[in-house]
Length: 436
Image (tube, rainbow, N blue to C red; front, side):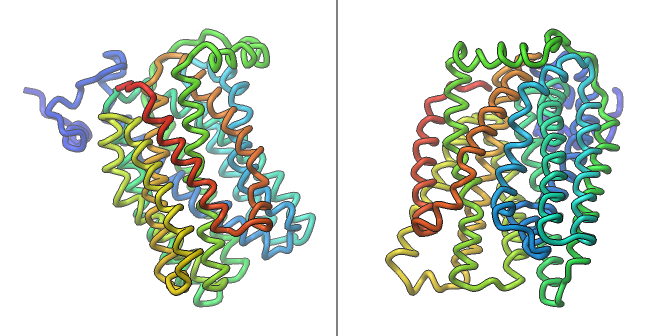
């Protein structure tokens, strides 16, 4: 009997199976390399998630732009540009990706450009200020977002080609947990530095370190054994994009998924308002940024493996449960802040709420990513990812002005409104068919 390599043994242990090469939805040739690819993807994604945390637009980039005296109107567009910029062009990007038999190199290219973009933002932070600094940061952030779009489409397709069904959710869960440990350490370090008077040089070097994470990720991802896949389509990007958008009309299940995903944005969009609540009520102490990063990392460590295993059984149920948690949390916070003033002054309330929100958001992200990968195979998977991300990117831009609503209604009112959309999102997710 052939002795199993350590990757196969560990792969079998993590996935609770004796035969590490038991595959579903991938061909036999690719199946032979599944254990190795499983860990390469996990390691690569762990580094990018750490990079994402250390260049988070809701915390680090906002703080940096404020420090260099960038205009407020530019600061308000950081999150919408960073997120929608990676999504809107994906329907055209997908046409290019479809011409490639091996799509891991698209991911590698995107990772390198993300590395260079974040390092450039760090250099801008060190050497410029004011309006010039703000616009330069936005330009490099746009390049970063477009590069992120390349990685988003390519990574899901590579995942679908190399990792079997009912293993993908656990892979994402273990990745989130591993990166959560690193994020936890990063949060503790940032809290420590904030109490010791961290200056712009420290945060610039933090961005340099964050950028290097994508370079390491690219090197690791290049080692994945990917076999040639379908290359139909992609001759005319814009024509293919227009035709591809037709699936939103012709495919009812996909259309309902996009509607549900749009409503589930509540878990992401409410996050900065929890931070704003804490700053508004507790003050803008430097340790708060590190504290929110810390509890968010802890939420991933504890919840992601559980969400991952649940997603391999029913990814739509993960979306439902996570959305309900996020929505009920928002409604509860509104009631506490509005009607129980004694509790709203409690320092423990906001990091605790952010921790629960982190658990919910982890479930929403993991559930919908697993669902869309399992929903289709071949080039159809690329179409689904690109079309859904393009539409969500447009929706994000349209809701980019939601921060302005906070000046008209209360911050807790914005949280309530978004949470009610989350309730509807949970219902729409529940009505989706199972795809496992």
